[in-house]
Image (cartoon, rainbow, N blue to C red):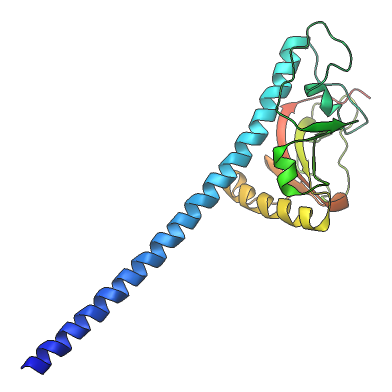
Length: 203
């Protein structure tokens, strides 16, 4: 009788341990998922913050951020009054440093030493290619600003591609690199691009 009770107790203990182990795995997976979702939400807020900064620049100065080239904007105009505008009330975003048409900040520094933030112009419609620049047609309404986070190196490209895949699933139901609000351009170590304000290419 004692042996039977002991055997039953041992079986009960094993069942309890198995259940506890299963719950631990589930809890661990749920925690990991929650951490990943929080991380992706922080990136979403990062890009949305830059969209608001570009919008505020427009509201203050009565014009959008000028073009540096056919598809790149004078991104540092968000943090320096390059044109000596009397209406400029920046800096509009937090930053570490800037150079010509790019900005380095805490997020780009996390990607890598060669990673930068940049404002692009590109079509709002589905891109024909994700391996080449998608310049807007002059005067076309099918154009928008994109918040672009550049990988800079092979390792940096791998990091932003991973971020893109997660954000694409979270925001665009994984519709791919050429469509939706979040896109990926693999030109020269990769750009993670987040759709912003409507624009018209002027030159």
